[in-house]
Image (cartoon, rainbow, N blue to C red):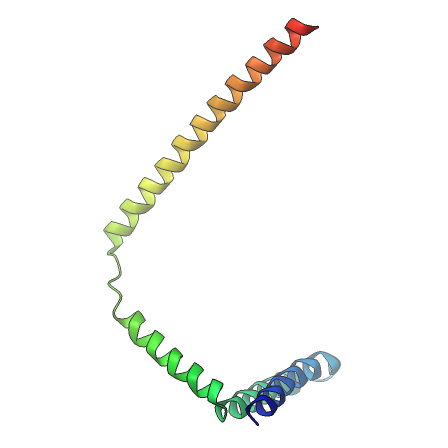
Length: 114
């Protein structure tokens, strides 16, 4: 029964999206309401499945974990971004030098053979 409900939920969402594009000549309000109705029906039907309830529990736990994250201050963020930018510039210069050196070697070897 859960699989049937999940298929019905997915079909409801697909019907909302298809209706949104199928009624392209209608008013935007009607199209958006049809899309939202399809999504609402799909979510509501999915809620009554085991997978839907597990997903809801997982989502709540994820939000709780995200609240526990200690975000860096503005100063720390700017300093880290500066270090990353400097590293990218240093690597770009290094790779450019290696590429130029290898190209010089290849040109020298190609001229020797010709």
